[in-house]
Length: 363
Ligand code: ADP
Image 1 (cartoon, helix red, strand yellow):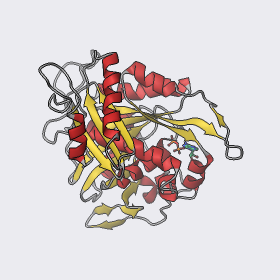
Image 2 (cartoon, rainbow, N blue to C red; image 1 turned 45 degrees about the vertical axis):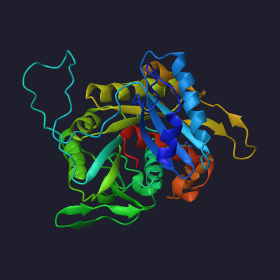
Image 3 (cartoon, rainbow, N blue to C red; image 1 turned 90 degrees about the horizontal axis):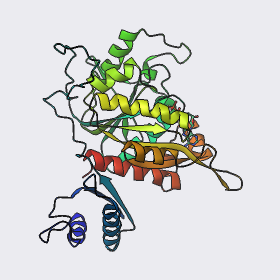
Image 4 (tube, rainbow, N blue to C red; image 1 turned 180 degrees about the vertical axis):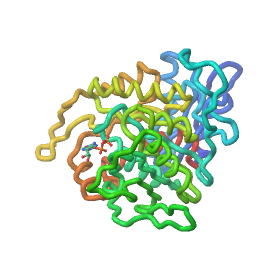
């Protein structure tokens, strides 16, 4: 099927000298899943209107292939987010306020067996970051990837509840064996602490606790490890962003302006440590009344999309504010598992396809 897609795209002329989209090296990350196709077109930043036409033409050409009903074209203006370089440390920020002198920070090493680490972050709590992490991880799993999910929110770990996990991980030879649920490997500090006793951690313990969870867990072979980051942009987040070799990050935001201001902080943090930002996901976008089905844009709609455009990051998709999403989460059965063919699962899976394509992780 991939070849059929390439054949179609090779019919679209591009550039000078009789080149086409494929021969000009514009196409990457073709993902085919059932009857859906996602691929990226690397475009020049100053492409203007011509690029939109190119996108529409590519979409139209590929959707003509028999058996294909959904085509998603991701435009990437920058260099593709690459997998973490295993030997070289990420480039350090050149922020002017950084003291001059040798950089003594530890070099992030690769996590054995883990091909790519994806951070799911938000500028503040309560925007649905954990719900999004879980469903995105399950969406990536539905693409056929081997997926792990690490709950890094050590103050309010909610992943065990969202994933309906009541058992605790085993410890074998001083290594933690993650709990497997719905086809993905899960680890959370919540497994190791008493739900009734809130944890009070001092700064350095937060960092070492988090790093321990990343390094001392027996993940085995994974295509993607999804990190549900702690909300906000404090020290713990920064440490994770610096010390874990992240292939990319996504920012979850509600449409409210305030959240977007916070989301901007999240973007800045990843930019400062040179972690590729794959895009923004708008959560609790439109509200659909469970009784009458009427649509209301409670928090305003499209704010994140407009903001993503302004900030030059990709808009990965919008998830509605819907009772089902909450209801299934409360039952410990995320909507992607509870209703795998439903409309919400479809949205999460489409976002997962884009994320996989951007990370170059889907094949
Ligand atoms: P965060 O991790 O950002 O603190 P959570 O994922 O825990 O947020 O979500 C906060 C609350 O909002 C939870 O009760 C969750 O079920 C609910 N929620 C999250 N996303 C949605 C959505 N799209 N529709 C309905 N409820 C949602």
